[in-house]
Image (cartoon, rainbow, N blue to C red; front, side):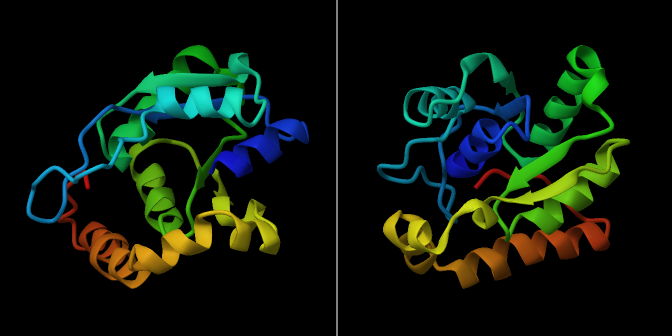
Length: 168
């Protein structure tokens, strides 16, 4: 996502980014705190984007939200309505490919927006995918587990009217 934001900013395509989120401890499937996992708070994201990727700090707006997709969507939407209503007609949602369908569906259910889908991986060149930690992450994280047990299950729960926001 960092590379995507950097490329969108430096190419002049996007003028403003909203970084929703909260500082929460990540938990594993048993509800225990994961060892050595630093939560990716929006403040850490903003610091990294400005210091490592050269994104201007004034285009990155940090907003506090509940630690799940609906919380992020709601906080970003409120921020847009209250401070940047001029951008409501041209909003994009940037996330990983496996999360994009559920995020778009939840955006449609919880806001009046129909955002432009932006797949973070589509901004990586093939050599960047190999060189950086992206490929390693997908291999080591058990992508099939993420897709089957988190994203697809979440999408099915939405369809059944049984969706419950969760933190990981």
